[in-house]
Amino acid sequence: MKKTIAAAGLAALLGFGAGYFVRDCQICTQPAVQTETKTETIEQKVQQYGVTRIVDGDTFVIADGRKVRILYINAPELHNKKTGQKDFYADEAKSKLEELIYDKNITMEKDISETDRYGRLLRSVYYQDKDIGKYLVENGYAEAKFYKPDLKKENEYREAEQKAKDSKKGIWQKK
Image 1 (cartoon, helix red, strand yellow):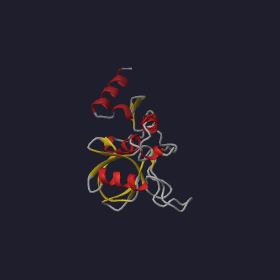
Image 2 (spheres, one colour):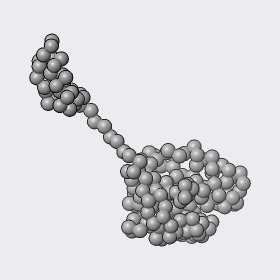
Image 3 (spheres, one colour):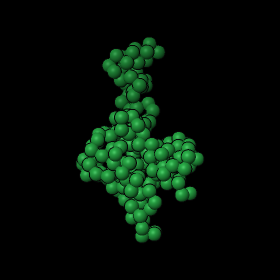
Image 4 (tube, one colour):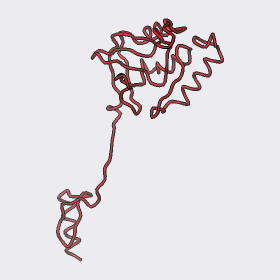
C-alpha cells in the first residue's frame, strides 16, 4: 500500500498526472481513459478580411480571391435563372452591400458549414460590430433564409424580417 502511494506521488511529481496511472507499483504509460475532444477557439471561427468586389446583395469577394456568401440571408438576384430577369430590388441590395463593406476590412464568423455547394465560404459578416446580414434583412434588402445545419441566428433574423415586412421596407413593398 505504501509503495502504491509513493509511486503515485512520484508519478505526480514527474508530471505523469491525469494521462497515466499507477498499477502494482509500476507507472503505466497507457492513458487511464481515452477521450477524444474537439476544441475550436474563437480565433479559428472569426476571421478578418478586406472586401475587393461585390457580386450581388448577399455575395462578395475577399482579398485572397475567395467568394463569400452571407449566412442566413437571400438577397434579390441580379440574374434570376428561373425568370431570366432581374429580381425586384436587386440593384438596391447590391448597392447597399457595396456601401456597407466594399473596400473595408470586415470580420467573418463561421457557423457550422465551411462552404456551400458552389464553393463559397458561408459566414456571418460584421463591419464595426454591425451584423451586416441582419441589417440587410431588417431594412428589406434581403429575406431571412436558413439551411441546416447553420441555424444559430434563426430566431434573431426571423424577428428582423418580420419588422421589415410590417414596415413594408425594400423587397416587402410589393408583397
